[in-house]
Amino acid sequence: MTPITAAVVREPRGRFTLETLQLDEPRDDEVRVRIAGTGLCHTDLSIRDQQVPFPLPAVLGHEGAGVVEAVGTAVRSVRPGDHVVLSFASCGRCAACDDGRPPYCESGRTLNFSGRRGDGSGVFSGASAAVTGRFFGQSSFASHALVQQSGVVRIADDVPLQLMGPLACGLQTGAGAIFNVLKPVRGSSIAIFGVGTVGLAAVMAARIAGCARIIAVDQHAGRLALARELGATDAIDASTAKVVREILALSGGGVHCSVECTAQASVLEQAVRVLRPAGSCVLLGMAAPDAEVRLNMLSLLNGRCLRGVMEGDSVPQTFIPRLIELWRCGEFPFERLVRYFPLSDINEAVAAAERGELIKAILTP
Image (cartoon, rainbow, N blue to C red):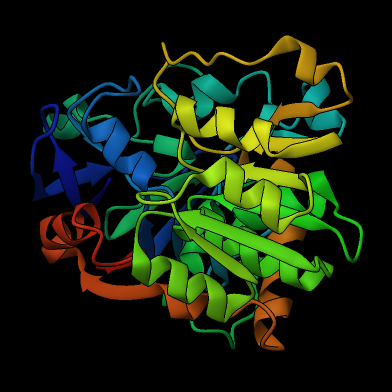
């Protein structure tokens, strides 16, 4: 066992407390990583609040980056000393994984949202065993994480490791929705609803893809201003504007694509309504399990498409290095989204995020 420091949440809507836990040694296909930095994501807070079920008490965190310390006997993709980003876990054997679509792994719910390994065992030992881990395959609000080989992405040693964690989820989700799913034609139009981390990643990717009109929609003036700096051609304040009417006017009757990042049913309805015939909308926000939406069925018959997307439809081992290369050449400057906090200040980071004072907090053990 390895003693680690972890931020534990013990009750719904509770505060995180730093505790010493006993982490198991790596099994055959597992990797122990010393965390350098991990992003704070809205999904972590949804789990804390139990809007999405996950067994508590738990160590959350799913945008980790760090250095490999130990590997199991069957691990071939990394070795001790490698710098890595930690993404979601997948089985590597089911039809979805075989088809190159690991975000839709048939065992994904168990591997990422049960709090345990695929065989039902926990990753903490002794008195720590009552705490669940393996959130999104990692639980990286900690000094160390024990992860399955499938969720480990080796990266170059010369990039700032603390910065790279958010590539694991939020940035991968937003950029992947553009590059891997919508694949907009150069000169086309797109509306992006909600420009937090995911939405701003979509804005940057849409600019790289050559979209001529990129419409950002949000209620935070600061986020809209940053969206303009990162590539949005238009910004709409959803708290005061008639959003659908403005987008239809700006786009000449409808956009080719739309991206919904808020997980709000009313916003998803807007994102579909602003599509021109044969347009496509992707849903990225993680809504509550009982959330429902009403759509006009006749409007969908006009070739409009609505599709849910997880993790940007990405294969992390190839997509995350692609995003790093875009960052290297200045095309994907996601460092402009982040603010650093020590892991010991996790509750301050959460409070700042909930007040809308920052876009992406990175916690450093």
